[in-house]
Length: 159
Image (cartoon, rainbow, N blue to C red; front, side, top):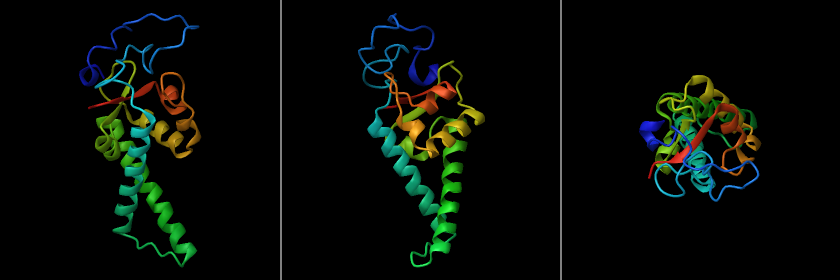
């Protein structure tokens, strides 16, 4: 991750006590307050998720026609769309650090331990917890959801 965000992972630049709240999200992680490498805000993350869901639906519609009058056919479409979303989310995040929606929103996910790739199991756990929505929505002072804390990752800005 250091090559994507600078050398912030070598050591936190600030030392805050556990009782003292951070002045900005990511301060305890040594991330900048603004700009490249800062913790991505909820708006960008939500926009990236919506873009990924839209892309998954469009790709699915190339192979299956959504039939709004037929509930069984629509359920089949939705199940395939979720599968396509999982594929579009897990594989690119595991090997490149971002999904198509994240790339469009200018954000990426990286590991806190400094490894350059997220890895397949972390991407799989992140996607599964994002699918449940609540773990991704419950964020701490560093703006990291439960899915990020469970996998040792953080979402940062690319621009």
